[in-house]
Length: 272
Length: 244
Image (cartoon, rainbow over all chains, first blue to last red; front, side, top):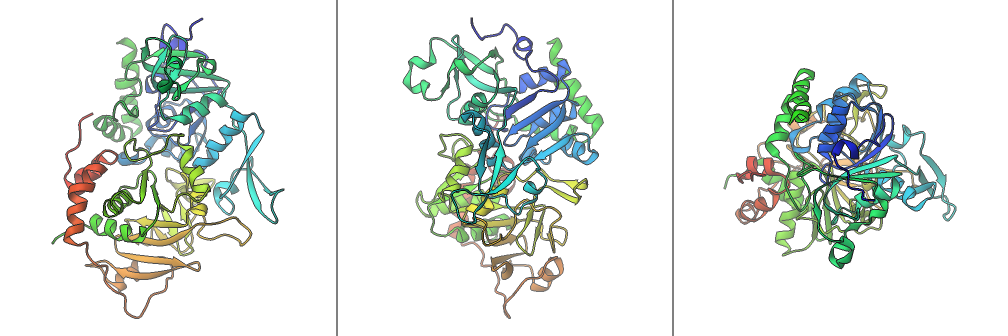
């Protein structure tokens, strides 16, 4: 049975209200078409894990009221300024924020990848990031002598969702050097991928492709969404749409402007 | 030769980088990125430079975690951090101002600071708004501390803080004023700094970038920078914004 879904909406069906969803950082293949589809569907109460940071995607989901809990290391629009809906949600207390630091999220997903309950990580001790995370623990290293070290519980997302350049009919997905996408897929219970195109043949038959391929074994659903990362970049394929991101930053600065943005760029697409 | 403030800062940061093997630059850091690329041009390809988020200027092949794994082993010599607030103990705040339960201001977040500050030997702090609002006696939230207890594993930390007004060095838990940029004064630095710092009897002026450095930055570095920081490259160096 092929993983390739007939429609994007069918591919993302499994992403349920209240689930833990892991998504990649702003430059690593962000599934923006799928994000817009989730907003149109009216998804609610997501526990969103952005590995390890996010930009437009988290801001849109938060602004559209889809997120209950956000676990990440930073949300910003980079050169285009602060992420306005994220900022407003934190200041109004409308979402629960689990502030992390980038390597902690990578490590906690690696723990799930390995099937172990936690990972140790250096740093953190003495920071308020640790102080406000009661799910993280400090132990004295059993292999050291008075060597405190932080333990992070494994993060096991219900679903990993990302965009990649291509997949084949066997469900293999070519990630290139975006290896954190593989970690996400290995760690999550289910993985849904959107791709720009379907590769003819089997990606694993070609050793050059195979090294950068996530085997279909890990992949549950694939949807074809051409330029599906727009307006964010797809590394090695296309750049961010700078003019659009600047427009977003401007519109999303107010609640009214954000609502207009949703009407124009998220809900309109449904009719198209 | 006239120069822009960003060019002076990048030249100074390039000198602070010194003779090292690997410089990494994090998110939202166009001036440090300029400095790192300048250092690489001067060293004819060394140090290695990794610009986070840039497909062209990184050599990572193992995903976003490779930066942190590299740093954990001591394979990154220099990194750059900033803060919504930076205090006199070298603590940085990338999270919030006000009470944690009801913050007044929210910044993007700590990024990798709560880890990298501990394990990168030379962390250069930069903040282009030098004011009592940003340089404070005590940060409201410690994203990463300037110093740690003796039993906490720590091979890295802050060595300097560069601002739009001056350059501080950091050692023994305190900042020392090293030089004041052209057009600025020691009195002004004291007036706009919220924390105590040490200073010599005579504080030198920060030397301007040489004509040769400016040429290298504008002609060779700026076009490379435009890939990751198109707006900055356009504003500072007049590089045309590429269409997507």
